[in-house]
Amino acid sequence: MMKLYDINQEILDCIDMETGEIIAPEKLESLQMDKHEKLRNIAFVALNATADAKAYEEQEKKFAARKKAAKATVEWAKATLARELGGEKMKEAEFTVSYRKSEVVEIADLNAVPDEFLAPQPPKVDKVGLKKAVKSGAVIDGVTIVEKQNIQIK
Image (cartoon, rainbow, N blue to C red):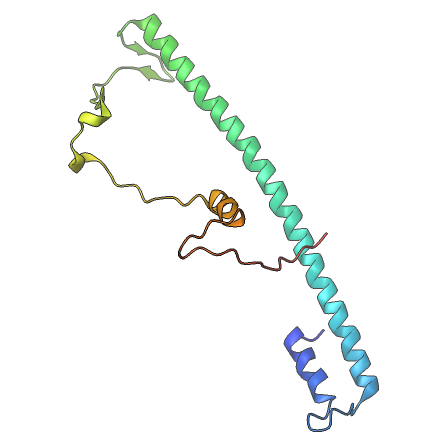
């Protein structure tokens, strides 16, 4: 089957550009049917990709839940071992439980931290709030509501 841009070019070739007269009506009809079939197949590709994306999202949610549960199990096991071993080592053929020193910074008052140690965060625009404000009559420089056509395939 031809590519869509080839079909479109062939359709244009069936029409006399100066007069607008159809030069090859049978070929034009066949090309239009080919184009319709091509567009139909593209729509099916989009439908299938949408279904795939939804399935991937569901799998991501399931894996995220499993990951969270596994991490919670690790934390529970570490806390239980720390409580029961009381700082003593435990050495087995399959594993060793030991302790290592680490340092962390604990911040009691965030306002007392000098600015040089604060990482700047980029501002985040509340587009939903902006849209409501503009729709209710607010005039905000640089902000407009643009109506778009979004294609849907069901």
